[in-house]
Structures are given as C-alpha cells and as structure tokens.
Image (tube, rainbow over all chains, first blue to last red):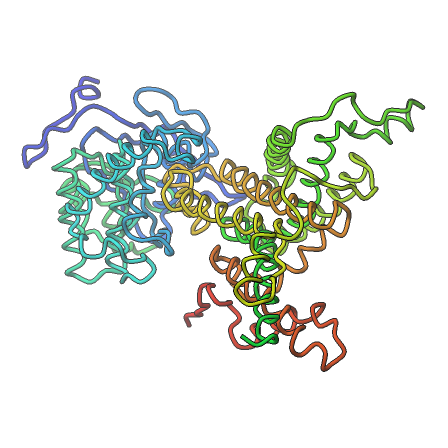
Length: 272
Length: 328
C-alpha cells in the first residue's frame, strides 16, 4: 500500500498527494430502495475525482453522503485518516467540505457579494457579542474576509455583477456564483453536483476552465458528478462509474472508457 | 393656520406616535416570518408575558405564588426586595432568551421540514399555553408597570407651539420615548442583519435552508437567535404598552392591530412594518377626526382592517413585500 501515502503523478505532470478521504463499504437504503450498494473508493489530495453514471445511478446520493446530507445506512467515511462520526450537514461544512447543488441553492434575495461572503461564515472567528456590537475587531475581520472574497470574484470573472441580487441572474452565472461561494470557504474538498447541467456549450467550456484553474491555482481537491461522459474524461484524473447503486468501474479516464461494464451501462446491453 | 388645520396636525402627530407603537409589535412578527416563514401567532402573548415577567421581577413577586400557596397552605406573596428597573429589564431579557431555547427544544425542533401551516398551528398552541402559564406564574390581576419612563404631556412642545400658533399641541412624553426607542431598535436590527456574521447567517437561513446548511450554518442556533430577538422586541413592546395601559390580558390583543400593519407593509420587510404602522396610526386618527363625526364615530375600531382589506385586493404583497411571481 505504498501509494496510499505517496500518491501519483498525472499524465500532464501534476503531483497528486495521499488519501484525503476514504469511503468504506457505503450502503444507503431508503426503506426498501437501495440507492447505494457497498461502494468503496478514495479521494486523494489535489486530484479532480469524478463520479459518473446514467441517471438514477446514485451519484447525487453519494455526494450527499460525503457532504453529510444523508447518513449512510452502512459503511464509514474516513477523513484525514480518522473515522468521521455521524454529523449534521452544517458540521460537515465546518470540517472544510463545501458543495454546490444540482438545482442551485443560492440566497436569491441577497447580492452576489453577500452570497459569496456566507461561504466564509465558518472561517469567521468573532463571537455573537463582538459582532452585534460591531467593535473594531469584528470590523477588521470583515475587511480581511472581504479581501479574500474579492479575489475569488476576480478569479471567476464576475466583478460586474457583484452587487446584483442573485435571483435576477441567468442560470449559467448562478452556477458560477455558487462555485464562488463554495470556494470562499477555502474547502479541503470541493463537491460539485452536475456543475455543467443545463448549460450551453460556451458556458460548459467556461465552467470546465474554471474547475481546472481552481485546481491549478489553489490545489483544491475536487469531486464532481456528471452524466456527460465527454466532459468528465477531459477534466478528471480518476473516475468512479456507478450504475444502479453499484460501482462498476474506478480508475483513470482512459482505463474506464475501455471497461466493458461501463460501455454496457452507457450504451445498453442486449438482455437474453 | 386655521384652528381646524392645527387640530388636524396635532391629531396626525399623535397618530404617528400610536403608529410607532403598532410597529413595535409588527416588528416581532416580521423577524420570525422572514427567517423561518412562520407566522408567529404567539407574538402578542410573548409581549404580555415579557411585561408580566418584568413587573413580577421588579416588584419581587414570588413566581407561582398561588400554586405554591394552594399546595402548601402558606401565604407567600413577595420577596422582601425590589429590583431596580434596569436590572429587572436585563433579567427579563434573559428570561426571554431562555424561553427561545425552550421553544426551540420542545416545539420547533420536532417540526423541521413541516408545512408552514403546521408551524402556525403550533404557535397558536404556544400562545394559549403561554397565556395560561403567565397567569399561573405571576397572577391574573391587572398590574401597573413603571420603569421610570416619562409620562404625561410634554410641556416644552406645548408652550413652544402655543407661542407659535396660539394653540398648544398635546404630545405625550411616553409616545416620544417610544418613537426614540423604535428608531434605535430598527437601526440596531438593520446594522446587525446587514453587517454582522450572525445577521448574514440569519438572512441566509431566511432565503434557503439547504444552502444555509451547506455553508455551515446551524439552523437550530439561528432559530434560537431569531426567537430571542423576537422575544426582546416583544419585551420592548410590552414595556411601552404596559406603561401606557397597564399589564393585563388585553395587552396580548395588540397583536390584532399588528395584522393590518403587516398586510400594509408586507410580512417580510422591516421598513414595511414601520411605515405600515405609521400609516395605520395616522390614518385611523385622521379618519376619526374628519369622517368620524359624520358617521357616528368609533371608526378607530375598524378603520385599520378595512384599509388592510383594500390592500389585500389591490396589492396583496404589501407596500414593501416581495412581489409574488408564479412562473409557469
């Protein structure tokens, strides 16, 4: 198990680190329905890890397990080499696991800037009283966080909509603001639930570029879900393929692409 | 100025200040509605309970005295001390925070993800429980509340206006204080909600629960916070109304006057609660002044509700509420 610690080098020469999170034998049942069946895989520091599969394969459920929105029926989540106890979603977020949602969950009534600032709530130190009284310390802290947020805004090229209420933005920009909010938390792991869903080709290309740039610039470990194979293959370092709640493939894109089970799942297979 | 106009101006001014008192009650509703989508039927009773507790603490009443006496056959009435007004207010604020924690633990926690109507029903239950609980705890008799706020006619205003117009305006000192307190309260709440970490978290929860969880906000903490603030606003309203007209059951009925204020101003807007209160306060006084005599008076009892009805027909989201757009 040497490469558990040491990691590997990607074809384009990026160094991927050791195991950051490990999912061990995860099973998730809703009553009689089995959404995830006995799945294990790991997420390494600095890599872009994709979970793909046809609709209803259990990808989103998997992401919800990682982000604490679902508690797995069986199995364990290991983070930083320690077993993570059962937690509520907000506690998981405070561990440094930020996420976006398939159907976009932003604060529509708040400005883009305010939305992104909420991403930094977990990093703010001042207590309730200091904040309520608006003493110097809290003000200085606010400025500091504001500076970091402005950097992210520049990075994602959304300067011109900073003060716009999010509810008025078009779909593609909302997705980008949601990414910005998740990034603002300086996450250890960034979870993206279908970041390209419903976008046109141009928006998809932009989003791809941002995901790669974020990984490049901040070294952010990224886990993303997608059902569009083409996009994923270009983007990710390693891919988990799910079908009907089971894992049918795991490895670098090229390897997965030629896996017979994966081809069957995507193209369909003639049943006798 | 003609006499008629002078009387009307005085009436309008008094109306504005009554309006401030309505706004104070409406504010509590808006805070909770905004952050949790719950119409808190118990807000008025919360104000009554806060006022009862304040009087009780200040006068050194023994809580549950009747109950204790009935069980033990003793004659407990009061402790041998009185508590200074300011300390009593602080202690009462503490009780309201405790109340928020208990409400979250016993009621709200178990109703997460339920339809708003279920939560509304729960607050009705809460209102009746709290009403009875207040009675048992502090007794059902009418109490006077005096925390040292100035009362009676403001003589400076009276003499000044008498010099200017030859007619002295009658403005109550308590109304002036209420206005000042309301301004400070709204300023503090606005600063808190716009510029503080917790305020931002509060607005986030109001907007989208799922998204709030994903950025690490604890919904339960925010609910305790909101109900504490609503409890504090109820305390302020309770002090003002209690000083004005005594602490008794009818205090909880001021919530009924807050309803038309909310329909006018919108359920989700703090400025709306203020402006709505002012419009209704001034509107009902002026209407009584001009139209009242023509139709036999007592218009103040229904004017606010008729105005609210008209708003419901033509602008159901209120003056400041978010426009309701259904996408098909």
